[in-house]
Length: 397
Ligand SMILES: Cc1cc2nc3c(=O)[nH]c(=O)nc-3n(C[C@H](O)[C@H](O)[C@H](O)COP(=O)(O)OP(=O)(O)OC[C@H]3O[C@@H](n4cnc5c(N)ncnc54)[C@H](O)[C@@H]3O)c2cc1C
Image (cartoon, rainbow, N blue to C red; front, side, top):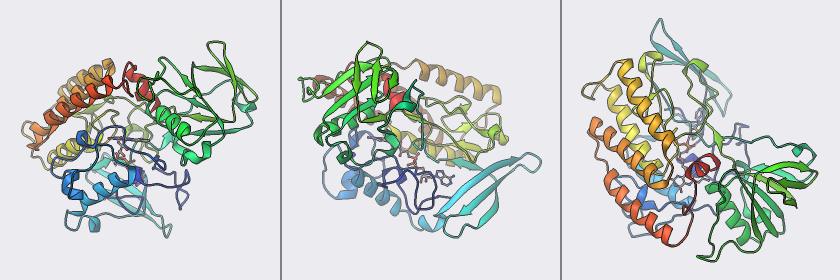
């Protein structure tokens, strides 16, 4: 396993810059004071609960550092795992050599700069999808004289104190950063949505505080003034794009890549893992789906990939036609998802299918039950997911 960082749980690390100590794009996108926005019960691993890890019952919503500790704990139990990982090694290029049915991989040792070429029979791309910001163009933004940043670069809510902030996007990041802005003393916050406002009732049932205003899209900037589609305008100090990410894999030969658009089920992928029609079906993507059960889904996908590579899945490999037909159905279903219960059901179904193939003990059905209880609680409390158009959350997270 090649890993550019020095440990597990990269996205949960707190790093102050957008590039790491070696000048590489930082894959961590979390910020100080980040807590999970879903309860730990819907994403804990089937073989290692939070209670197993911490030795006691802990709160449902966990801070970033606790999740990271939990991940380290789960993988720390596997003997010699860390010895099998080459840390501080970045993959620069992955090419598939058709004549010899092998992947040529070029890596760089980040500490010494030494390049190395290695050959692999299979490649699993698990490089994360929260690294390359998606930033829409807005007319006149070049005349804006304040600070412009993406949520990827948002590190500390203290930075918002006393500021009038425009947050573009209406997904989970936008909502969370707006709440942090209020808590940490932002003077005024404008939220700009593409299709549906967040409409948060916060504190419960009372709506946004008077310092938060929601408007539709920004049509243009003139200097530091943003003009919204509804005719309103606001003079702001900081513009923060909470407009999501692109799934980019700059080290992959273009022929092998998949779409850079975030989705619930990427095209050209079989069983949520296998890249169809290239590299003799020895290339896999892990962790490219948006959704709700990230950890558990990716855990099931990982089990499936391992068994597939070892030829331990009955009735596999299938023909390309069968793979494509299976994939198309999931892409279609993924594109039609409109609200949170259907997303969760979709992911539960995928988990059950992969687990059945791989003989893996999944807890997908139990996770779904927990999710339904959680959703009801959130809806009753008029919180995050209530009344929101889910694709907005997907694209703007
Ligand atoms: C703000 C925010 C809040 C979130 N909240 C939640 C939540 O509440 N609940 C939830 O379930 N999920 C949440 N998520 C999603 C969750 O963090 C991700 O699903 C998870 O981190 C994905 O894990 P991963 O291993 O696929 O990717 P990552 O954690 O991004 O790990 C990818 C690894 O690959 C390495 N890498 C990248 N390129 C290369 C290369 N060329 N060579 C070598 N190594 C490379 C990176 O350095 C990194 O170590 C949140 C995400 C964000 C951004």
